[in-house]
Image 1 (tube, rainbow, N blue to C red):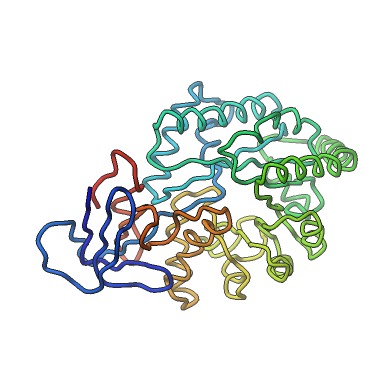
Image 2 (cartoon, rainbow, N blue to C red; image 1 turned 45 degrees about the horizontal axis):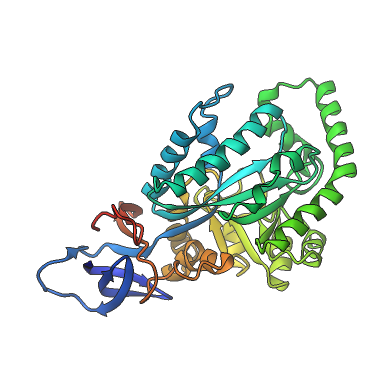
Length: 381
């Protein structure tokens, strides 16, 4: 089946081409430059046509499971389907649902959510229930003694395409300022004495478990060929440790120094798109715009706001006077390359026709139609 998309601004590689795109059987056949009056096809009317966005880190599925404090949604599959609809509507055609293997602070809820979320994504993909393609990003809290039991055999799931190593012990990395840790968990309403007790326990667990558990997870993931990311690198020392362990991705570095050290080591640097949209880090870490301006940023992830993944490249292009195609690569071509997804991320002949029609409304990009190449119900653009 052939589809012709004409009179659009096609973001192809490192250029924006005014012309028409021909799609056949779910893949891109060719790009023809220039406007056309040929009858038939879909007239894009000057809208942008960009590759489907690739999100390597989103917390949105977990938020579907716990929509309110104290509420656990009883239907995992419905949560996954609702999450898929939101991601697809934001122009994200490849999703790495990020799920935490940890038990702090609510042990039973965290354990249950991890298993339910992995099963829901796996079952939804197998049954063809999703509009976007869903993979798994397993986030492993190395200092939590319960992590290995929660992680279990899930690394063997073929949908797992990324494993990140976290250590949220207060006093270092993201929580170098302990007050930030307390603020994040403000719902726990700790007294000063209770907070001091929690910090002491977490530091003791880190000293005892973080090293051996980190090594075991790295070995297991490497054996299966799963890419590894080091989370919240704050210093060149953190980066050096990761490279010694053959980790190729620095995810959410908290300082420009760490990001620069990672790029010098040839690592990809992943940061949050909300950081750009909001004009800085909500937790007081380095600005993603500053990292991008310094040439040290390679990939953006939606983190906790799916809509940010489209907003951020357009805003970065405007704020830093960078080519739009280069900024969009942060959420398309670059994450595809990082994860070895060679069939997507670029509008080029032979690639999957994962496409987003984007219209500027009051200067802001709005996804008005989304197509996942090869999907049986892919709508016309």
